[in-house]
Image (spheres, helix red, strand yellow):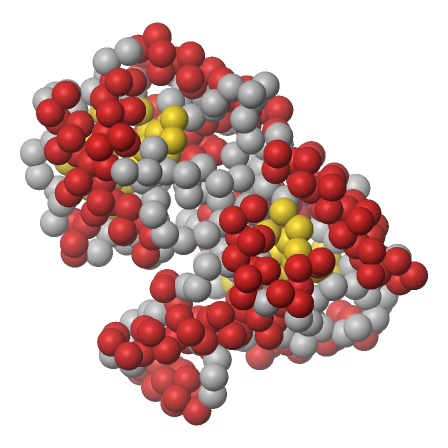
Length: 417
């Protein structure tokens, strides 16, 4: 398994948490070697040791510590490479030559049954054809978050880089025996971008470790919570839409409403939202205490792809959730009952939130259904079983062309609930 960061159960990104859950699930039933890139800090070291305790062999490439001068030289080098190639900036910035050497060494020294590659950021490395190769693409959408400080100026660069992502994704996907995505929307998008991979693209919604149920005594009856890291542009867009368009509609019905925006790295436009009735926390040590405060958890996302880990975490705690249809992608209903409320325009979204704020029994009933849906349908054991079905299919050389027939129905059933 190859990852562009160290999998962690308490990672700062959803990707790190999802990768850890998947890896831990596989390590219980298989011999797993992890090749990853990390920063030489105490938290990454602790994560590596935890992974080794699961029985996983870990080969971690540590990025060198960088002075300010080194960082500026890297930015210049990346900009030059971007101008001279057709690779997107995120692919350039996250490539680590030493990880390629580790992959080459590991695949020379032993024979693997499957190579599992996590995230499009790890898809650009060379992989041997001695074993089937499966890619999990965490977010199929063209990536506005590909831009980082030190990149060329915004304007034309942003448009060109987004276009590069589509071409880069398509090139990468063609190299893999199977591509796993988390939602039907991402699968449809991938097949639109590159029709050639239609028969090799499969949906497998990820799981979460079921958290402890929220303590209702800690709930603040008029508090609405949105959680998301703000280096991810869809979360910035969601927070701005929430405060500017949805919150005024909620206040017409519930003047006492308070909104909490919790997430690391809030940019200036998000920090500027902090005023009477709106709290911007920045990074929090743990998300559970923030979610426990919520009478209602909201996920008003309008852009981006993949699934929303924080939505599943809130549901798993038994919280009432209001989400857009995009944010609800991949979440399975429980026995035909809605496990969350879904609305896609500001007025309807606000009406759902206000209704739940005024109806404690209704929101707790919704929270119970949400927790049960997560317990039944979004555990790591089920995710691992569906992934194993995919592995079994791609390993069969004689039936490689019929991967879709053997595993597609298994994965489609999981999406349909």
